[in-house]
Length: 324
Ligand code: SF4
Image (tube, rainbow, N blue to C red):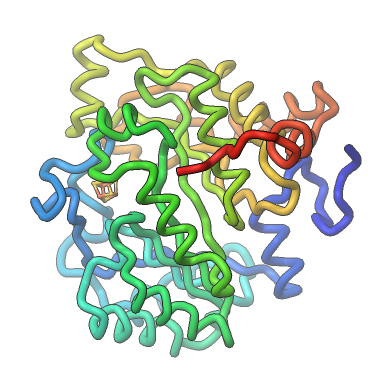
C-alpha cells in the first residue's frame, strides 16, 4: 500500500491535526469543557462506582471550585491556545463525564452557548453509547449544517466479558446500536478504545480494532490503560493483582491496530496523558512524546501505514466482523 495523498502530512497515519488543517486550512484546537455533567454509571441509574479506571474527581477544573460557565471556559481556552499555538479556530469539546446525560433542553442550551462563541468551528461531545436518545442525535445533526460535529462514544472493548470486568454498565451491542443510529446523519463518529485492559490478549484487542474498522466510524481515540490512585484499577495494581502493559507491547499493538483501520479513519489519539497528581502506572506512559515517537519508528521499521491490512483483514473478510 502507498501512502494516501489526501492525508497531506508527514505521518504514517491520518492524524487529527492534519484532518483539521485539511478541512479548515488553519490551526484548529479542541477546547476541553467541563459543563458539570455526571455519569449514569456513577449515580446508580445504570451502576454505582463507575468504570474501574475512572477517577472520581472528573476534572481538575471541577476540583478547584465552582465551574466557570461554558462561555468563560471557551474564552480562557481560546486565549491560551491563541497565545501558545497560534490557533485560529476551535472545536468546543464537552469532555468531562457523560455529556448527553441531561434533559434535551439543558443539552441544547449548553451546546448553543458553546457554538455562539466567536471562532468556534465545531462541536465534540464525549458520551456513553447507552446515553444517546434519538432526539439528541437529531439535535446534533442540525448543527452539522454549519459546524464540524463529532459524537465520541466510549467502547473500550468489543468483548462483553471485558466490559463486565471493567464495570462499563453497557455491552458491545449497545455501542453498535448507537453507531448505527448515528451513521448517515453527517455527524462524525469517534470510538474510544483502551489497550492494556486486564484479561485481554493481543488477539482480543485486534478483534476490537477490526470491529471498529468494519463499522461506519470516522475517527478513533486509542488510550493506554492507566492505573490511577483512588480507582478500583489503581487498587488492583497496588495489590499486585494486575499487570500493566509494557511499552514494547503497547507500541506493537498500536501499530497492529493502525494497520487494520481504514486509511480514511482519523486518528485522534494514540496514547493517554495527564493525571500527574494521581498517576500510578505504567511509568513509561508518562512520556507521551516518547510513546508517539516509538510508534512512528515502529511503523517506519515495518515500512507500514495505517490501513496497510484493512483490505485483507477487514474489507474483504467473508465473515461479518461486527454482526452484533
Ligand atoms: S462512563 Fe466515563 S465518566 Fe462514566 S464511569 Fe465510565 S469513565 Fe467514568
